[in-house]
Length: 120
Image (cartoon, rainbow, N blue to C red; front, side, top):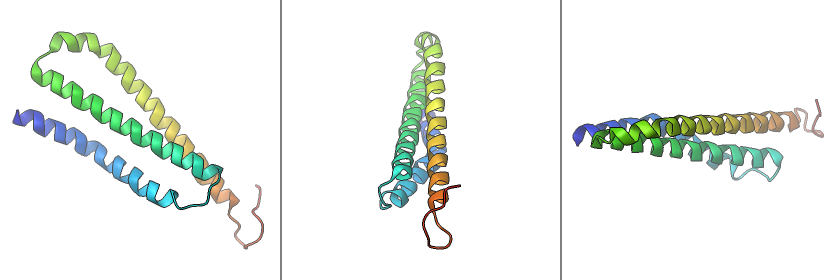
């Protein structure tokens, strides 16, 4: 039981920095004025947070099943787990694209001289 607990805590600790970064980023993005970059950033951060949490659930669930010795079920579940990890990876990649788009759009809309925003 102690080995399972340490294994689960180790898996959770691996994803904790991402969750902390998402929370800090949400605190920075929420007070900004409503605009397309803000919406994209909020969507990207939300998607990244949800994908990270679901990834944690999948990993912990797998560890619990292995600790209980349910190997027959794990063999059947293997292809589903690969598909789930693939979908979560796609969600994280899409979230990163949204965040980078929001960041570049916000940076392009800034005016270095205080005048109207430049369109490059």
